[in-house]
Figure 1 (cartoon, rainbow, N blue to C red):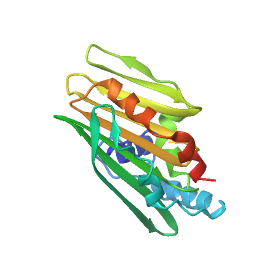
Figure 2 (figure 1 turned 90 degrees about the vertical axis):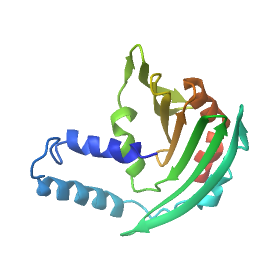
Figure 3 (figure 1 turned 180 degrees about the vertical axis):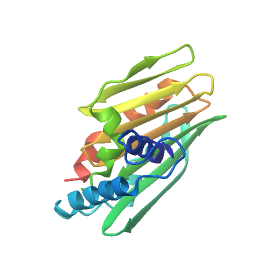
Length: 193
């Protein structure tokens, strides 16, 4: 679930906000990017994030042979911005599925975190895995799988405010799609209205 931060960091690096190699970051560019985010936020109507309990309620008890073993949720905020999120953990012998649903409200963070794949096409494949963009019920996403590591992840942007993140460890790529299919995306999108 840490990939969101890494994705945002990579996007800021590629946008020139701060350099990829070790040197003094250009703080003026960083401040400019933060100011632009804050201005965009203040020009947006106030939107209350959904209660994380509603997000937790979307987790099914099981996904195929995987059984839910844990779920949790929280709401956090700072500087007038709030995020509501819930996580579910599913196990099947040694295999593990984790699902995270996050509501970023109107602050545009969900779109920013997904910008690299939400507007472009990615289709890479090797002997050990793949990375590709896809669409599910009109929502854009990206999925990756590394057969050598038996690890994969999937991200889907729903209604431009909810981020669905799914990870599988010691499982198959089909487990990612099965987990996505088990979620009620229409109900998730409707929570934002």
